[in-house]
Image (cartoon, rainbow, N blue to C red; front, side, top):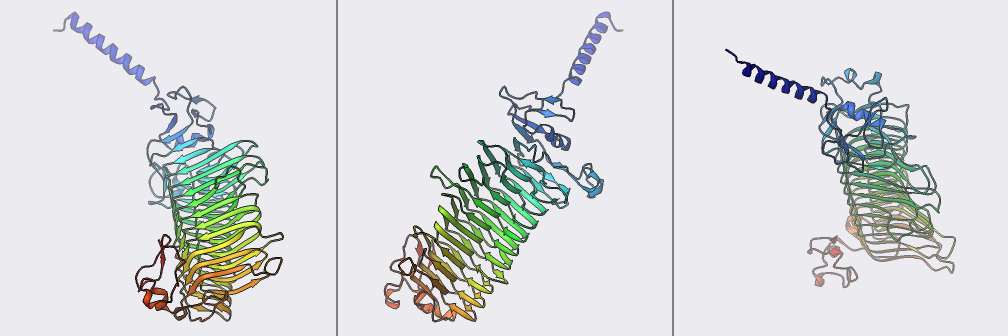
Length: 563
């Protein structure tokens, strides 16, 4: 029999349980449970709601109600994924049944060019599966439409169960459509680190797997791009400025602007990329702006590119076109490797299609790079490393310790390393173009101005130096062909002196099939070029001026290679 005390005790515990249950039911989980300043994204609805709070200060709904519970005293500043998310919301593999199908348009990108994302987004190595966007009539298309300041890192976008597909018009990328600096006298930072993107992206102008474009909408600002340790794969298709990472990178136009700082390093791209003008494995078109503080403000370092890259003009394994025309603009392209094949009409290179430096004291350094894919052109300016170098006035382009191994074909101005070097100065030549400590291995085929190393040098009042170089590939052409250089045209300096100097540079007469070259250098047979470690068998002093810190001379069965 139950006693009064038993009944009271039972009632007391039941009441306590009910009170606790009601309290639990009435308490919502905080949006930043670990108080690290990042709002937690637990599902696709949370991801969608980022558009209502682009600064990441809290979780905001469509009515404008904001929850910032758990945020530190300094406030929240972004978002973080807590788990994998799948845009195939019913997991049946059929796109049309998904929650974010939107009558065929797919995911509605976060933000806009007028109201860009301006926060951090940490994926914590979680994966977004099966992203689908089909908005070919709209600009600024991607998971995020636009970003004006922010950092996106540790995000994986994968289409393993159903291919990721992102289609837009201008400024289209899988991750972000447009990177925009909006106002004068501001510093904008765009950082992308440790992301993995696998998918297909297509659009009009400015298309990339990571982002479509980086552009300044103001005249006097500083925007800084950091792209580090990202893995990108898939297909990219567009018109102008199309690439595996970012289609178009452009700084402020005015010389009085602070300019662009871009560091693109340690990225891996494996993609099939196609477009028209300015197409590249890393970037389609880069405009390098001025620098004041002595730093090299634009650098592309230690990136790896593979796949196939196709366009019409200005197409490169790494960069379609690199332009440095502003006052004191500086750029470096260092330690990159491309195994991608390159196909198109003209201005094609295994590394860079078109390289231009013109103006007051811009300088570009291309060093320690290698290109291994075949380069096939229908017209002129085709090179195993660089298609066309155009340099004018008080500019400098220095290329050293580069090599190319792919076969090269085109019409005119075709070279195993460089197709065409064009220089012109309207004032006294203050700076030069250098091609040093470099070599080319590939077969070179064209109709005119065809060389194992350089197809055509066209120099007017600006110094060009070629030194410590060699080529060994077969050279085929109808006119102006040479084992090392096909043709040199020079106007000399203002006193008539020749400003093109070729020294300590050789070619393999047997393998090239050529006994002569422009530049008055001497070719040697295979045995002579291969035996620098056996002085008694070699022409005395053949490599005497070549640095042992730069070159590995190997054995008597090896050609010299770069260390």
